[in-house]
Image 1 (cartoon, one colour):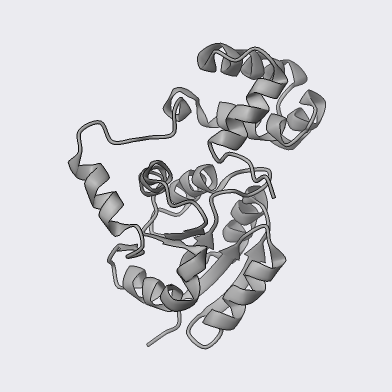
Image 2: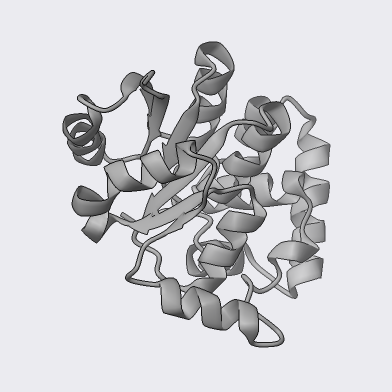
Length: 214
């Protein structure tokens, strides 16, 4: 059976090295990325079959990176490997196009199985959180990341970059838009989320997993 071509994305070098050791016998590891934007650029260049990614990544978080990847490559398989066990994040991940979700603390035991499951056309959720996930789908009013659905993709990108300390000028350069456009979106984000300062934006982004705090 042909080995799946896998691209690894995590902002911790030790995690990437650990994944490589776990998967080198079972997959063709085509590359790595340490932030969300590099992940998208690398995927466009390498065309992997499957991407392993974290939720909290610099420059573009995993949820938003996943949405962009699925638009570019609808057949691409995505597995989140993360520390976040909250059902809000799990729901967001699957809405973004994930086929699998497992926790870093159990990745050593589950990762190969998860990849085989997903590449076989199925979904995989770690047994550590499966009961919570099922309960969330059966209970009316399932949780979501508060306010996330009220922001456009561009606004989420700008919010993350603001929270990571980039100036409006630097954000404009990264996103290839005008300084005025960045300021407009920043003001709109504050209005939509009822926030009043840049510090409030940072706190919101951290609380909702849009930036990594490590």
